[in-house]
Length: 390
Ligand SMILES: Nc1ncnc2c1ncn2[C@@H]1O[C@H](COP(=O)(O)OP(=O)(O)OP(=O)(O)O)[C@@H](O)[C@H]1O
Image (cartoon, rainbow, N blue to C red):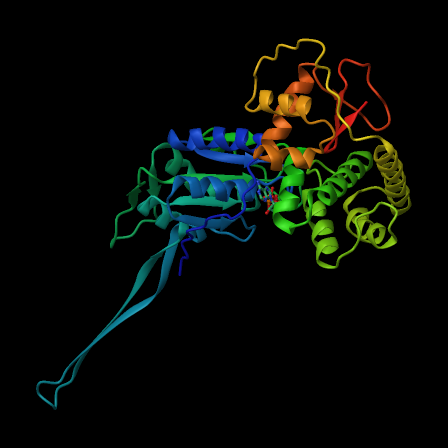
């Protein structure tokens, strides 16, 4: 039996970075193309694929690539028998029996999607052998699905105009992944998905675990720092952030860099995710924990008052929404924390961050990096969720 999903991915996090990718992919799909999302493990390919499928507003057929797949697992097969037995005993001494066995065809998921115009999400499609996926070539180009020869049904199915395929794949160097055929790649639009940026990771962690923004910020910074120093891969460690956050939240473990329980959880989750020898990985994690502990303490000693430079008349070019509102608010209300801004201005956190980023780029705000103060252009600094007086 084929299950058709009417999935509505709940709590999809749509930060500006995610939105940019999603918008591009949606445009391609709306113009009739199929899309391939390629990227390292855990960057959010499957979640985005389901979100896009949901936006297309058609039922969804979900398929997971598998090394054991045969073409019949995609298109269907002759399954079972229909048996017809006719017993004719009109004259009771003469019995005539006709026995006929006939196989009947059962559509598999690709065929169903092509016939009905559903959206096919083919997750990690390159875990199936390339020759199995050959059937997709004519589906995507000629919009014809070719079925095995059979006298009882048509051998070609015209693909429904609303049929779309969204493929996802991991890089070819991953274990259990096959090379992708050029012909298939030539028929889809491939988007290389980067690891989620810091804001996206924070928002996902907050949404999915219910942890508060300050703790999410600490966990994400720790994982990203460890990830980049240990060369743990290209994924950015989103799944590790989610695991640490969920465990800390559910077991009320304090998210502090010097807290032994927190350190143990981080070690259990992070140390096995790097190719570094265990001792080296442990040393790196201790170094990261120590640095973050010191930088947090130094920051908390800084005053959180904001005295913006409103003696100079700054003419701001509004490049992103709410830039003026955020800047004016900072001028009028010194001493506000980043999290207060979202609540008090009634603006989404991601929009606040986009506005702050743009203000920084225009030289109106400064970003502090750890303990290093940049040359004084203005008196407002922003670092990791806090607006700080310099
Ligand atoms: N935009 C998003 N909104 C909400 N949650 C997300 C988002 N992106 C990713 N996630 C969460 O991050 C985790 C990893 O995402 P996902 O499974 O989509 O990654 P993936 O790239 O498909 O990974 P893999 O290649 O290992 O299958 C999941 O728990 C998912 O729910």
